[in-house]
Length: 77
Image (cartoon, rainbow, N blue to C red; front, side):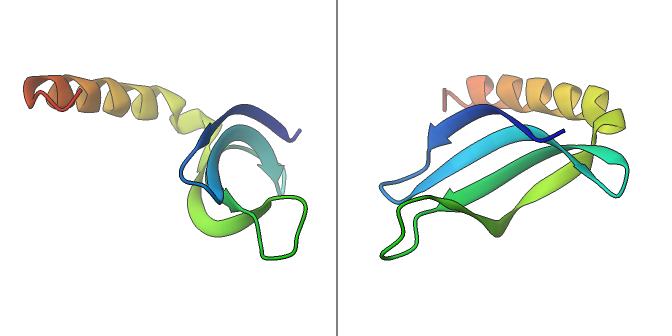
């Protein structure tokens, strides 16, 4: 299964895509930068990103919530 769940703009030429993918029988959470090469019409994935086994989702969620708390305490968000 390859499915993009959320896309958001990083800058004029790049976007971040968050999704679910499969590689060698492993289900993965994929967070990756996509870019528009010169002369191209469609964005392509770059090597800048991370793929994490979905089994680690609870730890990822916990880490993101902890990060959110830290950002709020620092008044960054």
